[in-house]
Image 1: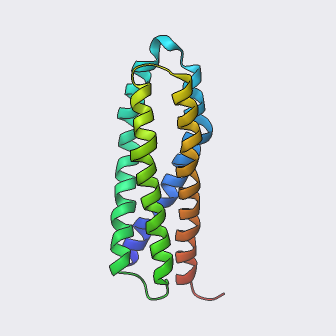
Image 2: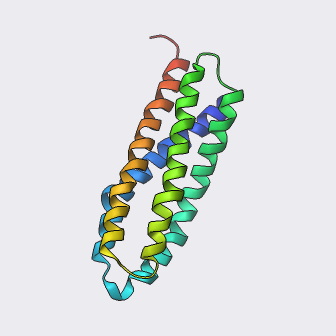
Image 3: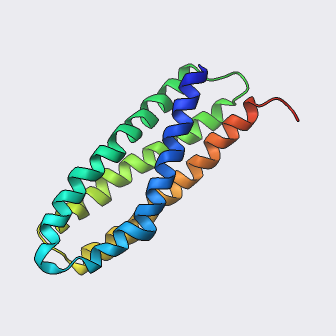
Length: 146
């Protein structure tokens, strides 16, 4: 059970850091790539970012689901469910908003699609930031009283 929670916390905190870098640095810099090379840049981005985020997102999802059945006694069930709900927000936003916008950008830079990508990515940024708070609260509940 400890390894389950640690994997969950690690994947969430990892993805929280990744999403903030993507939101504040990476996505805004898409506008600076230039039209001539943008389609190739977007293709490389989509391929390479998957190696970083897919394993961590999968671990986060699977461990989040597992915590429903293997929750440490000190962690209230509603906290686990809130965390799982936020994972749902992240995956839904990714599938319904960000992936289609990357699809538009795969044909070349389009300012409106880029603007919407940066704007809608705040959903994931906020959800993962809240998730970081949730998993840190879980850890705090498992620490001995000070």
